[in-house]
Length: 405
Ligand code: PLP
Image 1 (cartoon, rainbow, N blue to C red):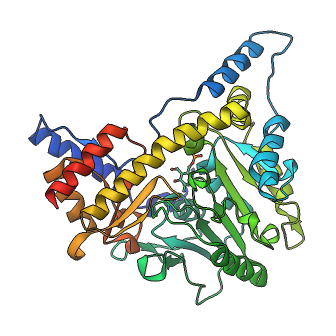
Image 2 (cartoon, protein in one colour; image 1 turned 90 degrees about the vertical axis):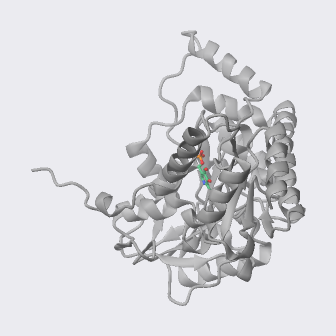
């Protein structure tokens, strides 16, 4: 008899986006003529930039010619892309990350989920609350989260660190020892960034406790403020305690293309084992490498032309974020994020709970948002709006929201 992984049964249903879709569909059925504007989903809408398209067309032609055809690629990714990342994302910022510390993948979600393979069950996991659900669910599936407490909407063995306006969206150091610490900056869902000093506090903690920081930098290209960190390796001491996840999804419209990378420094060692070597072993066992065509497309964003075109797309979303932030502030709301992120995190008015405010915006303004409570208990009292929509629709959404508040 085959015994299944019982941890699947403990997982709560993917309630959040299913419930948003259900409520939106219900509203649409009752109001078929309603012009609904969706600022809920975190997916890009602009097409691929020309530099990426051209590089991929060329790669397709290479694959169509016996002289240049490529089969399986390196598990860890092609050198041309690893070298471009090392040079432009790290060396250009004065950060020493070598190409052989960079592992190309089909995106940050897979890597954030798969990284748990490297760690023993007895590790104590700490996550920010609210949280990108992958960090929690992948540990739950591995059996490292304990039981799911339906009332508290928390796992019994996960250490939750509230990150709210009250603590400036920086998690406080834990009251008990933790071993694996997930940090995400710029943060999904709050859109806020951790400062150098805040990250240094965590790097020092991790080095002192032989813990590991799992740092998600998927949104780093949205940073506009001088001094905000694009990588945890900009913090002294991070290479001996941190793994970093990066993604081309939001940077270059690759959500449907699939490409990202994970950085594991060579000096990152625990119990005498190199985590870089362990990850190589893990990837070569379970992953046959990202597509050559996609990696060629990703490398094109590091050419001068590609860089300029990426910035143009990002500016489009940045302007949406500004419109949302200023519109909500004009409506008298407390707003966070937006400046270094495509996400705008907004406090609900008058202490309203986040599903009620979601319902009000849908009913009265026909605007779909994401209730903060869906990202964890400390997300209660907030909603998330995204800057990935159409510019005119985004402006219209804010006109409507201002009119009803
Ligand atoms: N990390 C965070 C914080 C995200 O919000 C997302 C996607 O929404 C990802 C990772 C996944 O990125 P990818 O598309 O590269 O898998």
